[in-house]
Image 1 (tube, one colour):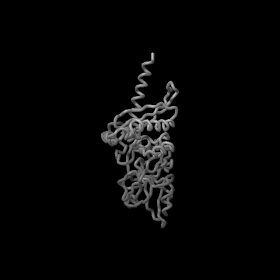
Image 2 (image 1 turned 90 degrees about the vertical axis):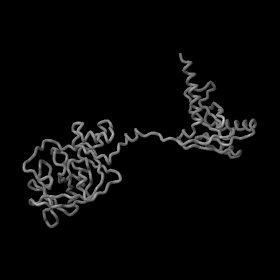
Image 3 (image 1 turned 30 degrees about the vertical axis):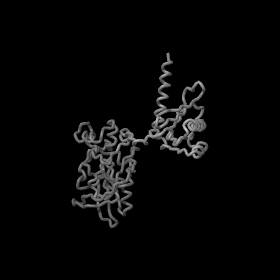
Image 4 (image 1 turned 180 degrees about the vertical axis):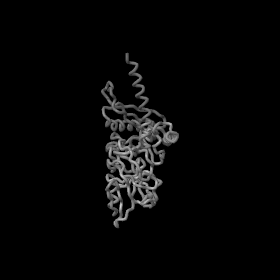
Length: 345
């Protein structure tokens, strides 16, 4: 978490390599990936709460190198366990983490001094308003106080700008930032390597093509395709709300049966198979359908097992695999809707 003390004082037009010694932060945070001497990217971004009740992403952690100025002499320090947070305006050094590592952080007379266990000074910072800026090679302590009436603003991230501008493509937004085509985008990082917009990905997804279906049967009744249409809003004259169909794979011939309930299919299929046996001297060889309860039941399974009828099921929720029966359903419904429209005044 980033304490509110880092969000309440200074203007954010400072050099990008300034660091703040912060008593409200629970972790060391760095906004420049170039300062890391070793770095490990997180498998998925972590979320850090900031003082204005929003979260910003932390992309990884590692060890950084910071050159401090002590008695006008540069001294390089390596700080470990630092998180990479590109959406920050300043780097933050956590007092609690420094203390847990055996260092002493003293605030007195407008100065912040960081000392080791032996009392040796290893870094210092001067208070500006309510913040303590580390005296480093890239951001020396200012000699004059600055205006403390303006608020420290965390610039919006690449992801937030992408959403505000109605989801332009990554390459397009990068060009807009680099060429300054939109006002106030000059401080937005244009590195989109770790950026992925879930809404854009989902919006541009398309169905994959289904592979070519089964080989057409070479004899009648070798394979029958079946489906039961959902309940109709308007029942038939016989008060039937469903209809079931059987379509012969070789000839395309279709048998149609209105049903009171879906479970009526089993009785109808047994009667139809007896009809086929009497007229064509052959039982159905394969019954292809979805995995609805009207097909997966003991009565139908026992009958098919008794007469050697194979039951083929498609993958659940994939009507494309039962396209012949689905297409027959659409044709019947289309004819019914067309007839209904002709009856309208």
